Structure formats: structure tokens, C-alpha cells
Image (cartoon, rainbow, N blue to C red; front, side, top):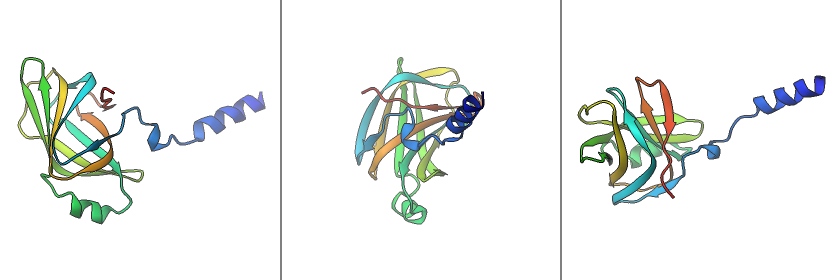
Length: 146
């Protein structure tokens, strides 16, 4: 019995490494880039956010080289409606620095967005996307189609 308890405590106490995120990393290049998503993203409430996380130990350098407004994302609905998100700030988590993209104008709620496009003035390597929806109170990792 004790061996089972110790094994359970040992397994649950180990941290999950950031490389284990279910979002497939990709490189964001300067210019226009399109990403097909495996699952649609849902904008359930006002204030939805998209965070582009990259491994970056130097926060000050990251903020200097990636100024606000340097990345714009557009989510597209099947019928042509769009939700535009603009880089307005930064997020940090466990050795990752992230560009925080917030919606420019409020879009209709409950829409399913199945295409993601970026217009970037800076490049980022090994980007991990995270979709944040306030009303849903959950974090959804974005899984680009491979």
C-alpha cells in the first residue's frame, strides 16, 4: 500500500515541462502568414485574447525587440466575418515570454473561427499559441493543423 501511495505522490509532484503543451510550435515570419486550425476557436465573450509564447529568458530585451502593435492576428469565420486582434501587451509564464493580442473591436459572440492569419513586423521562433476566453474561464491551447 505504501509503495502505491509513494508512487502516486511522486508522479503527481513532477512538473509538466512547457514543451509538453498540446499546441504544435511554429515559426512566425515577418509579413503575412496563414495557419489552418484543427479545431475552431470560439469567441464567447468580450475580451478574448490570444497569447504567442516563446522561450525567452531576457524580458527587457524581448519587450524592446517586440514593440506593441508589431503583430496583428485575424480570425476568420466560414461566412467571412472576422475578428482582429492586435499586440497590446506582454504575458510571462515559466520561462516563456508572450505577446498578448487583444481584440480591436468587439465581435459577435458565439462565432466559430476556423482560420488564423498573422501580419507580423517581427519574427518569432517556436511559437506556442494560447486562446483565452474570459466567459468560458478556461484556457484553450491552439493546435495548428500539421
